Amino acid sequence: MTIKEEHVIVKRWKGADGMKRNLPYATIGLVIVDVIVFIISAITGDLLYNKGAFDSALFSYGIEFYRLVSSMFLHADLTHLTGNMILLYLSGELIERYCGKLRYLLVYFLSGITANIFSGIVDMILARKTLSVGASGAIFGLVGALLFLVIFAKEEYKEITPGRLVFMIVYMLYTGVTTESINNEAHIGGLLAGFLIMIVLYGKLLNPLKRNVDIIIDRDEVE
Image 1 (cartoon, one colour):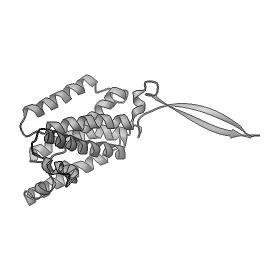
Image 2 (image 1 turned 135 degrees about the vertical axis):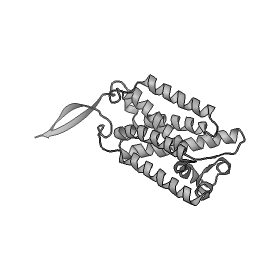
Image 3 (image 1 turned 45 degrees about the vertical axis):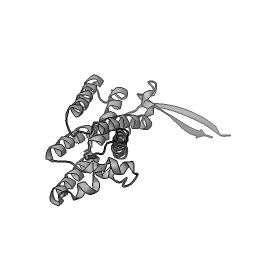
Image 4 (image 1 turned 180 degrees about the vertical axis):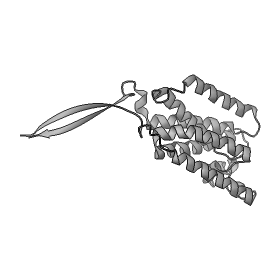
């Protein structure tokens, strides 16, 4: 006769990778690629911008969808690149440390793509045509993901308060509204996408009873 015994083990849940303190290789890799692409752009002139910038007119006709991704690696000038890379590293390191490389890259690219789609839809509604470049839509996705973690996984992010982060987000959006040549629609789209993607990936954090612990049932067979 076989008797099955269940042993319930409760452990702290520390995120997908246990909040490891390893170097954020995925974030560093993205920064390196952006810098390399910028150097190539400086050498080749308008070539990459003509071929890779997000064109809302082309988007409205349903062609050249690759621009949804290629535009994320192009930057208008050195100031644009520098500002985005600083924000990318600061926010990306925090998200990658929690989510791990694969989920982090998923959040990054899906947020960037969604940001461009949202921007393109707004352009179609307003009957305008714009070209846009930059990683800021994806970066705002990381900020949205960080907001989710600060609210629902605050035991790992005690140094960041939700109020402080919300203030920073509002200030960044306000700066986008009051500054010319800023694609604020992409920022908003990326921010919302990052938050929603984290809900899909880490919905368990929405349940207060499951927020801090995992329950594992270990079944042993006893003859």
